[in-house]
Amino acid sequence: MTRKHNFSAGPAALPQAVLARAQEEMLDWHGKGLSIMEMSHRSQEFVSVAETAEQDLRDLLDIPANYKVLFLQGGATSQFGMVPMNLLRGAATADYIDTGIWSGKAIEEAARYTRVGLVASSKAENYTRVPTQAELKLNPAAAYVHYTSNETIGGLEYDYVPETGEVPLVVDMSSDILARPIDVSRYGLIYAGAQKNIGPAGLTVVIVREGLLGNTLAGTPTMFDYKVHADADSMNNTPPTFAWYMTGLVFKWLKEQGGVEGIAKINARKAARLYAAIDGSDFYANPIAPANRSIMNVPFTLADSSLDKLFLERAEAAGLLNLKGHRSVGGMRASIYNAVSEESVDALIAFMQEFERTAG
Ligand SMILES: *Cc1c(COP(=O)(O)O)cnc(C)c1O
Image (cartoon, rainbow, N blue to C red; front, side, top):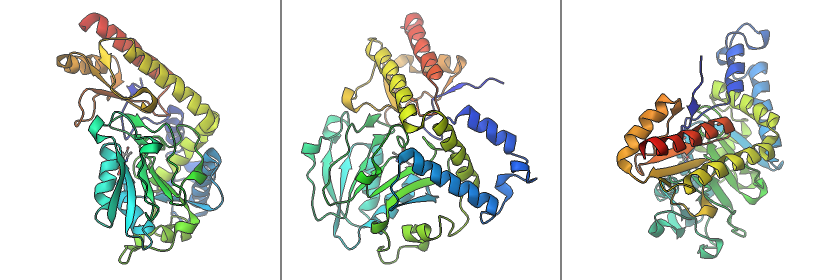
């Protein structure tokens, strides 16, 4: 068996050690004679898996006690609707910052429930940078301010946390949660689909300040009410038990890497080397303002786009998978989440240099 270098944007690479552990435990979890997938979510065994995963996430992100951690389904896309349903709390408007495709989708969904205040947008600059704090036209009457900390498709990441005063800050952190330390107390709510930087698809993590719960829009379905999930320890109905278990294994693995501080150093090295390789060549290019370049998703184009197909073919033959850029932007994209090793990034850089030499 050879594991290849996987640069998938999501569902994305998982740590090999986590997959191996799951394989070991697959048929007989901890000597119980059955797999974790075959147990009741209410069993003592699964409840301990669930609680350990939550505690490990609390440790990793230093989550304050007045925040609930929810393990939900429906992906980040469901959060686009759940956020306004739960957090409008009678206000007539909510503020959004537009930095690309994912923030755009969040805005579109929120507009079904409220008047959206567009605080700032970098659309006119083709989303090549993040609006600065000084550019944010914040409305103190807004229910909350929403932004997308990392635009997974554009490869654009905030280099600061917006300051919103008394107005709760909400972030879609789907593709850069756990990539570097954050101060959870700056946020009212953080959400992230698991399949980029947390675990397998099927699980969505929400971290929410308790005081924001319990005032949903009339008609909100029970399953879309955060308080219902908070009160039921995310077991109001059957949760995605296997994804939750796998996520718990990823959290343990992250702790072994020195936690979020440890992985942040590795992520910084990976991104710096890859961007340096792109910038050091006339053959490859990345359009994003250096301060706002994503450390997780690195899009790049070839100077001669007629070579794109050959690049992808040779990359695949060399064991480098999933480098095709998103259909909306074209070119290439290397997603280098936590589970993508420095060796994989170095293999990509060596391949790019070789390709430039032989095909350029
Ligand atoms: C992938 C992604 C989403 C959508 O996630 P789903 O789990 O497919 O709903 C939303 N926002 C960001 C930033 C993403 O990267």
